Amino acid sequence: MSDSLLGQKANYPDRYDPKLLVGLNRTDSRQKLRLDTSHLEIFGIDSWTCYELSWLNEKGVPRNSILYFSYSCHSKFFIESKSLKLYLFSLNNKRFSSNEELVETIKEDLETTLKTEISIEISAEPREIISNENSIDSLDIKEPSFQPNSLVLLSTDKDVDEDITCSLFRSLCPVTAQPDWATVHIAYKGKQITHESLLSYLLSYRNHQGFHEECVEKIFQDIKERCEIESLLVRANYLRRGGIEINPVRTTHENYEQISREQRQ
Image (cartoon, rainbow, N blue to C red):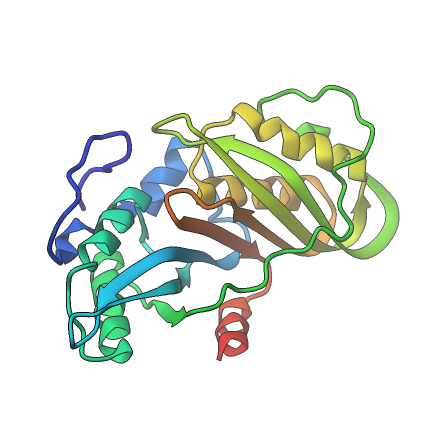
């Protein structure tokens, strides 16, 4: 696969070019952050939302839509965001005889790059986003350390089955150091994690450099290893940048990918 385009000056294409797509090696990326998920029961998807999909219909008239696609967290490669933006831009002046032809073209190009099956659809309407119910944002805590430290996570003896959200999450792009903002949703069953310690832990990512997928996997790994958890789901809805959102999900539920596909049908 080609080197990352992040942080590099690039010319925007004026014609369709699937070779613009770049896949990053997931194993190499995990090793850089010393993430080892091989011993964990981990499943999930990388879910992408692209708000600036535009093309020409068979008459040459512009059409716009929202593109949704996802693929397994076990794929060998994950898509590099800037290459995706350039690729989508290259579709702007290409004619398609139907929406189906457009979808099949994008699906084939992504699957060729990532060497994995892609679930894909286009829609004129945005999907519902994570609600902020059960938010821990307003809890009164001490000043957190701004480098991730799983040792701050604390549990009680109480058995719970709860969902928690935090919309204060920030990490940094490992290439450009630009801030990436997200709402993190954590659903788990097991011994209750104290909400104050969980908030301190999530806020500690504020100056941490890591791709979206890596941050979610590290959160999943730390909670699973540090706390007494029977089941766990970690999802991050990142604020869009350049018209693209990356929303990774990691979970202990083996059939999550299948359920996710069925819910979209």
